[in-house]
Image (cartoon, rainbow, N blue to C red; front, top):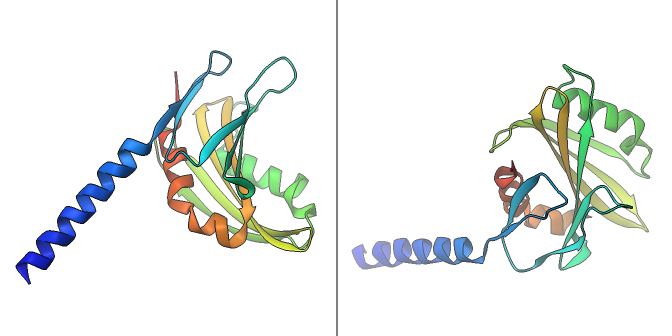
Length: 169
């Protein structure tokens, strides 16, 4: 029994080291933040430039996991929860089959809230998970993940890790 427990502990440690080794830092001269991508499955598909003001990433395929990062300049005193409610009321509730999820507090290098929702896209059950992270009293970053409901749920630990690693330069 002791050997089995020791084996399991070593397996967990080795797995943790492999995950840590697979993480890749992302940054660019055009952005004022860095984040860690937890596996080689994540790749950059768009960086900010003169046309696009946001970064985009995919996990394998857009349906498996798609991340868009937006910097939101808000009125002083606007909270991440306020922005989440505004986005829900003005954008997301209009998606076909929209089902509101719950809002939860979130802590990482930046704190804020996360909200989830479900919707239908081309007849497929989709999910959205957004991390609203407060940088200062006028800036909130929105990390918007979408994908097939079952696939995005499966990589929840990775979306959390990306959001927790997000920090300003």
